[in-house]
Length: 267
Image 1 (cartoon, one colour):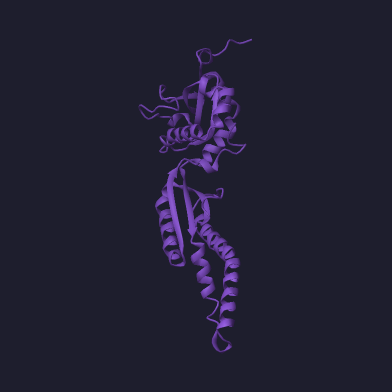
Image 2 (cartoon, one colour):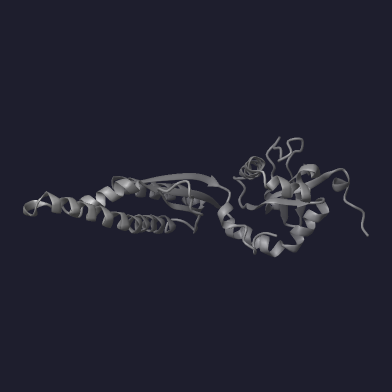
C-alpha cells in the first residue's frame, strides 16, 4: 500500500482549474487560488500542464464539499473564484477549463489524471487553440411586441359600430399574444444564425426563468483574429433589430467554458 500523499497528510488537497499546453504554462505573478493562502501554480506531465492550487480538506474534502455545495452563498463565491483563476490565463494560446470541484490528493494524482486523459485533452486543446468564448443575450419586450402585432391586425370598427370594434380589438389582442411567442422565437433564431456564421462554433445556453424577455442566450467560439469582425456583426445585427424592440447584449471574451466539459474533454 503506497503512503498517503504529503498534501493529504497535511490536510490539503490539490484543486485543478484547467489544463493548457505545458510550453505555454506561464502563471501570472501573485495569483492566488480558492484558498488565498496558496498561490496558483502548474503541475506538468509531458506536454500538458494542470493549473492548480492547494485547498484545505476541511473545506474541500469529500464530505465537507458535499455539504458546502448545498450552500448557495458558498458555492457562488467559490465558482467565481474558479472563474477568476481561469480568466487570468485568458491570453494563453489554448485553455481547457475543467468543471468546478476537481480535487486530487496530491501532485502525483494530478499527473496521473493528465496521463490518463492525455489524448482527449490534447484534442480538446487543439479545438480551442486561438479561440475564445463570447456570450450573447437578446431580449424582446413581449408586451410591446404584442401591442405591435395587435395594431398590425387592422383598425376594425367602421359602419358595424363600436361594439363590433371592441370585440374585434380583443380578438386581435388574443391572436397577438398567441403569435408573440412564435415571432420572438423566430427573431432569436434569425439572430443566432447570423452570429453563428461568424463564429467557429456555437451553442445555446440554458434559459432563465427570471428573465421572461430573454429570447436568446447563446455562446460563440470565435477565433481571436476574427474577434473584431465578430463584434461588428453583433453590433450591426443589434442596430438592425433595435427598431423592432430587440435589445442585444454581448460579454467576453471568456475562457471557452461552454465548449468544454463534455465527457471527451474532461475527467
